[in-house]
Length: 440
Image (cartoon, rainbow, N blue to C red; front, side, top):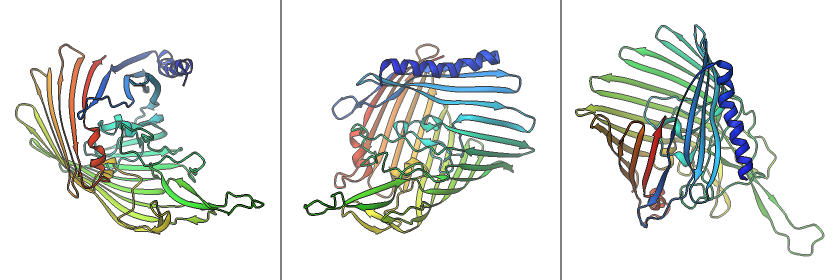
């Protein structure tokens, strides 16, 4: 993209931010400037990936109406390329019964920290996979309404357009991307892209309980079928050959979820589980159409403990189980159709950490010291099914108000005897993160 094009794009995005503020009359803003760099532990070389250099949130208010926006400037050190991302821009109305939102939004469902199998309304941005919460989500045009009465909370969401995950294709510094990128011609449009969800929350005793339902399409693409074509003209004297023309798309998926939160003293317990039923509902006249069906469950059990000296410890057990997988898929080694099984089925929706392990334990700990001027943190992730782990440690210092200096170290370990192991491929991603952060 040219610099002039991006400059015009920035001004258009800024007009979305500030025009409602002028019309509404009352507004507030916040944001951060956060330059940082990633450097490999192995040789100190830079890991060249885009990151959000600057973010600003603007909230405009008038009566019982709000207009909320979130704008980010994405930058890459190696080639000095930047892009402007309007992550959210939506209108909120607060009637007596609750609230109504419409516009580009990032929704947050689920009870567990960071890993939420029930939270599937927004696609994931895999460039920011290791960030918490909504920082790794992509906003979608949607409308939502929440109704409150007594101890009940009912939320409905409608999403007219399908959004897929942002994958790091052709990024040698990010080794867990899909092995290939389908062309635009190979991607098939989603049939009936309308998606919707419903979530009901209530309090039972000392616990908060939620039940949710979502009907949509996978965020990750799948092979739906293929055509076999003869590229040779009919009057050619050459020996005819055949080319396999693959077709990719997004399966229809329904999700039934439940989550629970309860506390007893300094000990908290969170549980979250989602049942997924997915199928290829495309009706196409290809040479081969994979009529696939699958069912799987993802779940998270979380314990958190507020220890003395302002130390917070959180432990999670993360699971992914494929219950059923029927139909056919393609063996990309032999290029022949093969039976779809619970072993070779790949989920297209759910928590991204299901890519790494079917069963894993994750433990995090953090503590604040010297009146919050220093934060220490540590993270551990262990794959329970095969060799693979991630360990991290970090420190944040705040030398003065609104300023922070961040230093993090992430070490990934795989199995040298299994090059296809996800953690083996991630070993070279072990890095040190050095950054500066200014909040305003």
